[in-house]
Image (cartoon, rainbow, N blue to C red):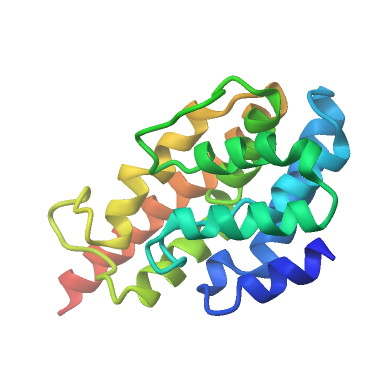
Amino acid sequence: MTEEFVRQNQKGYDSGHDWWHIMRVRKLALFINEKESLADPFTVEITALLHDTADSKFASGNSEQGYELIRDFMEKGGMSDIMDRVLNVIKNVSFSNKNKTGNTDDPLLLVIQDADRLDAIGAIGIARAFNYGGFRNNPIYNPPDKEDEKSTIGHFYNKLLKLKGMMNTPTGCKIAEERHKILEKFLEQFYEEWEYGLIKL
């Protein structure tokens, strides 16, 4: 039931935020929670499935409408007992949300946040970054400004490279360490190829 609801809701999202992103976050969250024993596995799974449903980047810029959609779905699905907790996590999970409210120390949030952030780094994170950049028609790179927020390379510096230091759980930290190295190696290779191409012109 929840899977079908999410599948329908994610239509029109870019492929970096599609059903397969949801599935990866779901598996990562369950794996982290299995190692850390921080929350009820069912609640972890439901929250992971629903975590992008109200994403303002895609919900017509209206997160509140997304929250109402989730609330209605959970009430009808007999999940009212965990609804407020799930919504609290969804409202606070995003990296870009600077106005966090509610319980930001909930262990459930720590698990979902780690899983979501892990999917933003490593090889898949790189693929997602450039996919989203293309979706938004952003430039790949605007030299010499590596931190230009309009470019995908700038996104590495403004978000992706920061995520390793923002993990909540020991398991999340361990996975992030390896994925962070892939980001660094990619950037090293990217700049080498960029400069080589300019020299040859």
